[in-house]
Length: 187
Image (cartoon, rainbow, N blue to C red; front, side, top):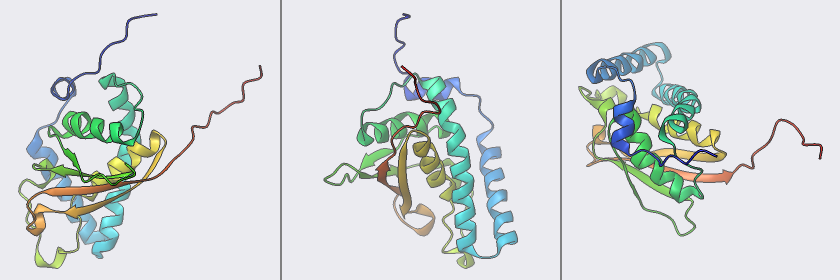
């Protein structure tokens, strides 16, 4: 049996991932949001679409994360949240999040981002005050966690685009889904 490789640090993961220019990424995301606003017209529909886009990304991103990070299976939701905050955000966005505000059961917490590369060059007009501009991130978290058998609900609590002092995402574990195997073992 080969020796276990220790998990990589957030900085090592960030350095190992192919990247695109941050400004290009930010401007492209902004163009997508703008096009959705034009096509869908209703801000709430845009929020749903951004969340769904993020969910689809998250279901695929988790495979790359697990393959490159050498992270072993997390024992509970608290450990999973720490891995996302310290390694996941660093690997894909180049930032880390702080995990705070745990509930007594350990099933709900907040990710607080001091810096968010998605919002560089962004100012929301008055007509878009209900827009959850970074809703793609909540979808990514939800999709990735669902792929590791955790059904969650993710909502934005604070948003610097609305004058808050940080970006805060609330993540609530709805249920731990038992793993299903595609075949039955005939022993």
